[in-house]
Length: 167
Image (cartoon, rainbow, N blue to C red; front, side, top):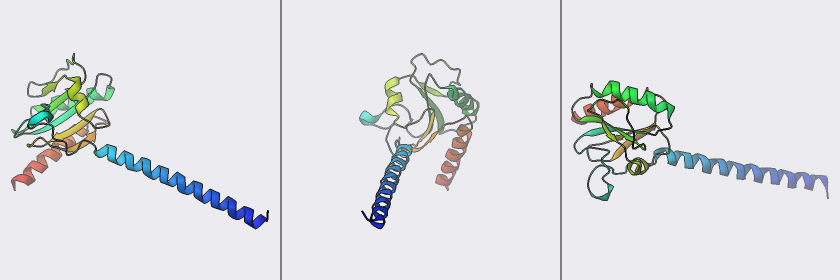
């Protein structure tokens, strides 16, 4: 085989492999993007079979999904406990746990759901998670809670959104 022909064949193979690797990476990134937004737009609080009790009709609910094997969840729950008393009327917290024996100290204004089935119905791919459920029962925002700092940020976002809606 001619050396030039061999070089062209090797280059062609390398370009094809690079293209295949790039396509595979693009597919994985796209899957991760879709997984991040999974859960937004699902109706969780109003009517029919989709009612789970996460949201409350006529109220914006900040739902926090935690599990029993989560060290970060402690920080998130502490932030929920601190902020619950300062929420204005029409905004509330719901904590959803997969542990039927969940017994963390939280203010009475925080709704606690200890149902594994409801926990599984929240289809975000991360725990702990913070979700915002609007007055009609639709999930309008989800975010992973890497620390308790995300809770006040989410509360600020909800309060700003409510203020804009009233204008």
